[in-house]
Length: 267
Image 1 (cartoon, one colour):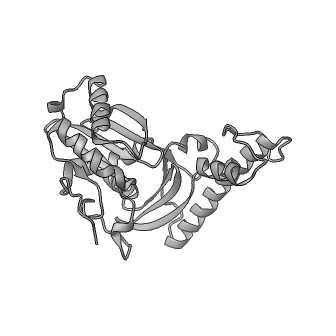
Image 2: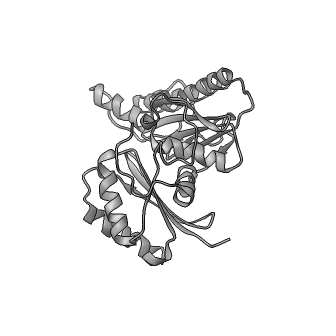
Image 3: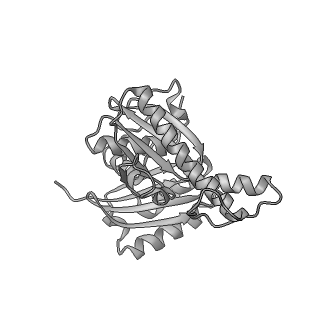
């Protein structure tokens, strides 16, 4: 099999994750703050710096894949990637998702990151599974009978903290970390316990409901996203933590997709 060097870019609301894959292995990964006002020139220099840091030249890369939940950044990123690598870019969308069945009346309304998550599950040989992606929003993405069956979207941990401190005048921002008690003795710990234990209870309750609805109690659950590490050893309902799951879905589309530079709107 021919060796591949793949650049994957996952543009999220708060952070942009970038992965360099040598065949199926993550050779390097980076996290950038997402700036929704970034120009293609600015992005070009960031890409150049990261590629040089990973000791690769533009011609070394065989495939480029991109997913974005920030619509206004799609064109600047595509332009910057095109200029630097001089290669076509595979953009993940409902029209470029490796023929993944999507159980939405309007498939284009599904976030490409969610499609990447279930594509990654399917690439593992699974036909059923649940991905809990814990970012600015927390998504529950369900792969059932080999297709994207739908799921849930709830506020993420940091978004919950931001809303709480913005809307309540007496509540000031605090670091987010586990407390050892439910009954807190100060306001900061009360906020921490409420958000984290509340999120944990929500996670377990929603997963129980999803499993019951699709009739599969033993369906595997994989967590990814920036906040997923907070849940390790706190619950038994998540069987695996994979920080690169979304990037793996992008890698699959980068290699096998059919949507080069497709920036047109979808129906």
